[in-house]
Amino acid sequence: QIARQIAGTLETGESTRLEVTLNSDPSTTLFVGTAPLTPAEDKLERPGVAVVLHDVTDYRRAEQSRRDFVANVSHELRTPLTAIRASVDALLEMEELEESHRFLNIIAKHSLRMDRLVSDLLRLARLDAGQETVDLVACSTGSLFAEVQVELAPLLEGKKLVVGTSINPSAATVVADHIKLHEVFKNLIENAAHYAPANSEIALGASADEKSIVLTVKDRGPGIPDTDLARVFERFYRVEQSRVRDPGGTGLGLAIVKHLVGLHNGTVVANNRVDGGTVFSIRLPRIR
Image 1: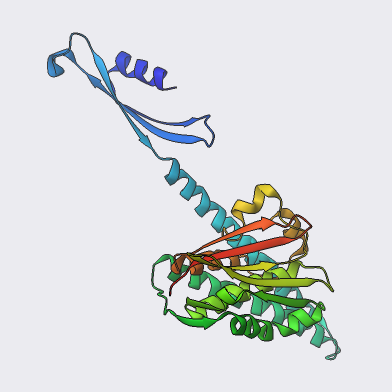
Image 2 (image 1 turned 90 degrees about the horizontal axis):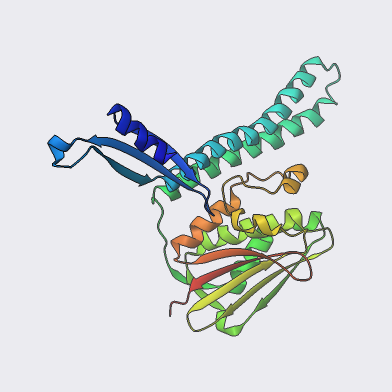
């Protein structure tokens, strides 16, 4: 393609522009510009062509992410809106008021879901803009785990899930923003509870080495396909199986987790457990 572009410029004497995708792994996208060089003007023995190549791979990937974002937002909003509209139509046609409570509950549920979606979108916008900072204090790991467990008690009890904790004395305290770390674990445990089978255990762990505090959340759910492990922290990204199950989340929780951990100069990764389930591991710098 580039050779034909150069030949065309030599033949016509006109500048050209072309976008080329190379079959590399991963693929690379180049923006190629050509301009004629004449012997008289450029002291050349014969006509030539100046070729400029710009690597626009990251730009195109960001552009694709934006398109995916819009498509996924539309998908996430369509489900609750459809339920709300259908319930309202049913209410308008009903004669018995007692039956209306079921539809009102559906409307309330999906209205709340939409409210959470908008709140999470605004939260991510603030995080992207760098408008949030961390207030580092010494936090008790055990207290943090207990607080989140109490907050999510209705969800955990509804599925008869047991939360187990294992805290190494070296990780009993972590220096972090208590509120933001609370939000991190609320998202991770809520995510685990949605996918964990009933009557199973969610295991919370804390350990440490010389440089880091490692905090983990493990479940006995269906796990995540290896091809999806690197993408679970993308906004609205869900494996196909979880879309079918439709756990009712906003699809933004793990993206928020990654941002909040990043504010602490930490990292978060997802892996599959050898004996079934998923483990999310957070590594935070050990501040003394």
